[in-house]
Every structure is written in C-alpha cells, then in structure tokens.
Image (cartoon, rainbow, N blue to C red):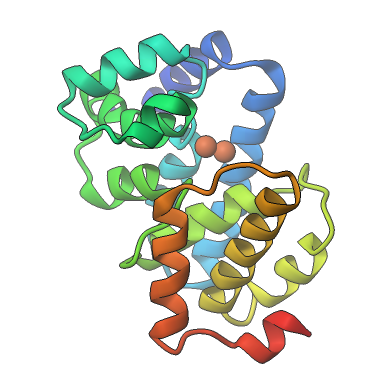
Amino acid sequence: MAYTDSRDLYISFLKKHLSKERFLHTLAVEKEAISLAERYNVDIEKASLAGLLHDCAKGFSDEELVRLAISYNIPLSVWDLSYPQILHAPVGSIFAREYFGIKDRDILGAIWKHTTGDREMSTLDKIIFIADYIEYHRDFPGVSYLREIVKKDIDRAILFAINLTIGYIMRNNQMIHPKTVEVWNYLIKEGRGFLDEVNS
Ligand code: FE
Ligand code: FE
C-alpha cells in the first residue's frame, strides 16, 4: 500500500482514539519532525511516520496500557505501574508494529524512546523527542531558546529539554522517572553537557 493510503488509515485511527488537542499535537509533531529531518538529513518519510504515530497509544486508559504492556512482554517497573501513562511510548511502539504493520526499527525505536529519551539515541530518535517538545502549540519558558538551539545542535537541545523537564517536575513535587535521571546522568558524564550554557 502506498504511504499516502496508509497515512489516511493512521489519521482516521488517531482522530478516533485521541482527544482533539492530542490529535492536533500529533500533526504538529509530524510537521516539526519533517522540518528537523530536512535540517539533519534524516529520511523524511520515517520522520513523518514516527511523528504521526508517536502518541498512537496515548488514548488508552491506564488499565489498557498495563494490559497491553503485559501482553507485549514489556518489562514493567513499580514506577510504570504507579504512572501507567508513561507506558504509552513503549506500548505505542509495539502497537504501531502489531496494529499498523510498521516494521521499520528506526521508526519503532523513536516512538519507544520519545518520552524519556535514552542513553543511545539515533538522530531520528532525537528529532522525535525534540519535535514532541517544541511543536508550535508548546508554550513554556525556554521553548523559544530550544527552538533556536535545535537548529544548530540537537544534542544540546536534548540536554536542555531534559534539564527543563527535571526542573519542572521538581518544582511541582512530582516523581522523576528513573530513565530520565539515567539519561541526564549519562549525557552529562559523556561530556555532551554544555553545562555552562544550560545554566546561563
Ligand atoms: Fe507522548
Ligand atoms: Fe507527544
């Protein structure tokens, strides 16, 4: 089936299962991902698909997410069971494979990693992570800076985004996903820190 035909199927699924805001967010992430893919010489179609499907499991209830995660053999931590919505990323990745027949590992990996990031991220992974963060509906202190630096250095943008996330979570007295802490520590230790600029 041609990509444009499949795209119509994805769109109708997303329209049906996501809230209107989430659906519009999805289209905006796809748009941003395509523009970053052009900038960073990444396959446009992969960026488009990963962007479009990154939140495909976001409409599922906590119970459905846990049930699907178990049926997909996704390892569940205590943290995941306390905040099942985080599972929309790994569940969405396998759901995209099982339900939509997406076989491309780059696309599935980008969907899997889009919420917490990962120690090792491909350029496509980074693009989806950042596109999710800066799509044009997003409005928070630091987003303009992120939109600027991502044009020059996507690694710095990732680090700055995680810095903002952790800061936000702490200010709101929420729990930080262990994976987020792991990724932050790894990137800082790897010397991809740009700490001076992040803090300025
Ligand atoms: Fe998401
Ligand atoms: Fe999203």
